[in-house]
Length: 330
Image 1 (spheres, rainbow, N blue to C red):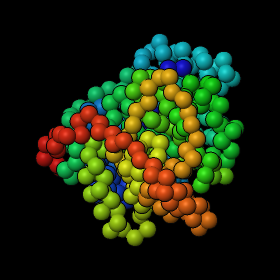
Image 2 (tube, rainbow, N blue to C red; image 1 turned 90 degrees about the vertical axis):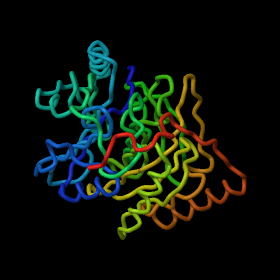
Image 3 (spheres, rainbow, N blue to C red; image 1 turned 180 degrees about the horizontal axis):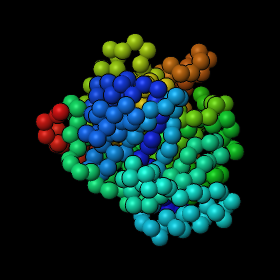
Image 4 (cartoon, rainbow, N blue to C red; image 1 turned 180 degrees about the vertical axis):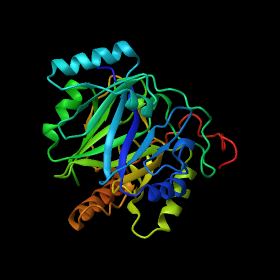
């Protein structure tokens, strides 16, 4: 199955007003004009495409749907056929769902952990250029999609084969400490290091969503803003050992984390997966969501990385030297 990227994400929230404030202050995003005053939904535009991040009012908080992009209608039909042959129940999207997501075609199904995945093609262009809520350099999207989604699972071994064998994701690398995590990329040239990851926590649901900026300064300024809010930081500023991203994590109003990062590496084919022997972070990323034993173990791994002199090359994505590109902020 030739999946190109994670193209869009939908989540649910019990408090849309908090999302509007969180989106504007931390992510530099304003709701689209059609949803700016809605009591039922908030949609965010991140680039020149239709809304890639959608939030629906609901009685529960969490993830709702995750859109996996393919090249066109023939690829969509082939993906649906492959799922059917794998005994995965597939349903066609309604006209309302197609309109909400701004796509030409879509089918959906449920993964072994209970997440609704949607395979789509034809994400339409936005009606107007992207304008951020405050001056930022923009987001790294295009062929790499919205960013990445990390799912909590009770048992990775029962979920991983679905993503690698049925959906055709490649394994980028994996960590066994201080927690089990497997990182998955699409099999296209210069793919994002991981569009999907699985973390074994004993629970199910979305762990975090990641947006990648085009400037390290955007990350630092967002971090300063997050530090103003007590209890917002889910993981301190740090750098990952595998995708080389410098980032921090903040608790969203939907009670999962948003990672804001810069400088992610891409993978090319063929790719050989390896264990992250120093854990998922070279430095920083003190994870408040871990228990004390887990945080202590993570610190030990980072200290070992420092003693070993672990370094990673800087990744400067195309467009990162541009200034605020989209005009005066709203």
